Image (cartoon, rainbow, N blue to C red; front, side, top):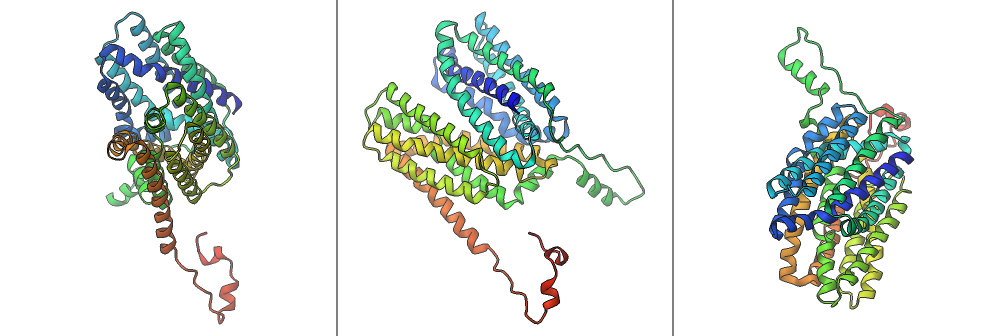
Length: 426
């Protein structure tokens, strides 16, 4: 697990180095901000269309091999981009094609790497492993963004892509030496053909096969996952696009500059790291905990929108980032541990498709809200909306919860029987 965490730190730092320069590269090639947004949408599109299929592939194929191959492919794309940039052969069409390939490979790489990390620890330590992964992600983001700017300044754009390619190769080299404590659930064998009726054969193959539909049905029929999707979706659309909302708040009403926004961004990163450290101590997080933390983050966001000065904003942003990082870690733990092992890849695939919808819908929705209400109004309204949705969901869940049925006093023998004998579910 230590080697895997180190590999992910290196990979995250390389990825953020590339992301730091990618938008600048598109602007350099096209001179169009619209083209920059289009490149991000092209990279995200495969997650929307192929996320579920990617998760099914992770459930079907050996996990270590799948993660190693996907990392190697992402490294190849990064090296290809670096060479094209170095020789001044990268046009907009080729860039869009490479972005689409990256997004397609990521539909398999994301769930494969996430579940491989969980396989390296005991079942009771999975929440802690997810917290460590969140910590590594935030630390890699902080380091990678800084290294990206320095790399471009001294070595050029191509060097940032090459460094990201090397980071993927490092992960690929580490994976064969990992020793999972428990193997991923293997694909169930197909039932042999017998003299059964045609309908029975189809039902048997449906129960034993590894179909995409099975993951969709499980997700749709699981209230915990649907509740988690609603909480995370509302938070993502109205509460997590701080590179947009806080940037406008700092440079507008608070009359700050790039340096001031850098201070706020640093506070967000530090809060994310602290929240990840605390999240690693969660043992059995629930959807209710995710909702409470999301609501707290929304209220802190609303307060941040009313900040009279930059100093007050930094003071509020730090705990806001802490509770939101805790909420993310708790939600990821629920998502990766709630489904049975044989379905986890497909459930993560469904989640990837849903998350892509949020990523595409969030910036336009916030942009429209800021046009109407301004940066302060968008932060306040968005934060209060998150808290209201969580509160309404909790109230609706409480009303639907069944009341316990008392055991009649005249049936002592039945009352004395254990729950397992009565066939009740915990």
